[in-house]
Length: 246
Image (cartoon, rainbow, N blue to C red; front, side):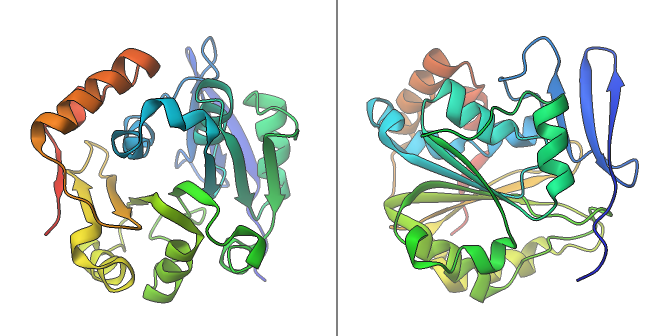
């Protein structure tokens, strides 16, 4: 296995950033609000909330592949009160998240697993147990997703409960959105996919449903308003830039 990159931290006014051996930002946190989600694309990775009954969220299981600065895991654990699991390859990332990004220690509803995500998610203990799967796996160059094959996305689908949802961050100079989308469509079916328009920084979030279900616009707006009121995410704004792929 290639050497893992050095992890470093920088502060930019009120915001703290995580880096993996380069100036690329791999995660961020507003120091005064460590359990909120700072980056727009990471907020969009929570769009699965539009597809779940709000009252059921706290009884569900969230999994994050690639810890970054821990924003998704912290939000799911602290704000949504979910059982939360993160899978991270680099032990330095976990240590820095605990020291500098307020990641809580493991407990009954929080687990950080040090492992290769591609191998870990094939373990039978995880199959069919995940309601919200967030995939944000990038190397230190942030050039393209580390795992981006139809086989990998099929393994992701196998993790999900019947109404479970996967969100994926697609970003990078060498990434091909169309190619990645085709691989997800092969694993989930084209009618299971939804996508945001890219952020200003170039992150495109794609959402895949384990069981495809169509929603009327009015129903989605009602759900977005509920998500926004309950958890202060900009969900009504999402609907302007979020739609089915097919």
